[in-house]
Image (cartoon, rainbow, N blue to C red; front, side, top):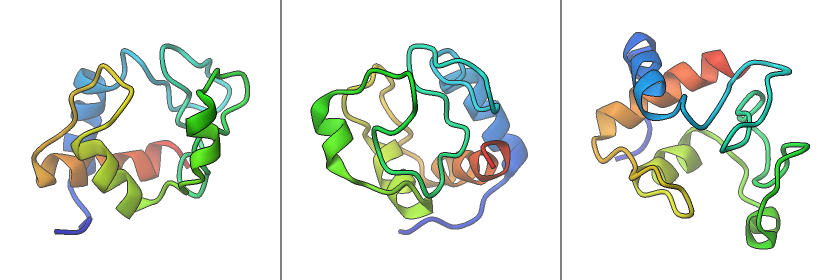
Length: 102
């Protein structure tokens, strides 16, 4: 099933409990364990200034949008995060990320 708009409030809660320990979303906030996600939508993989990516990530060339994030968040590679198996959770998180990272 593809991405469908979800509940941004629930997405905010998911971000706080599952993502915040490694990622920031605000403009100008520092990279942490993972890169800052501000400006995520429409950005290619491996492009956050000041974050050390693997060459494979830089060269992958995926452009982040609702569809690519929906697929990626189910079973992310190269992260300690195990992913969000429930489609509703991924929809909620992506809906919130679209607002929070714009």
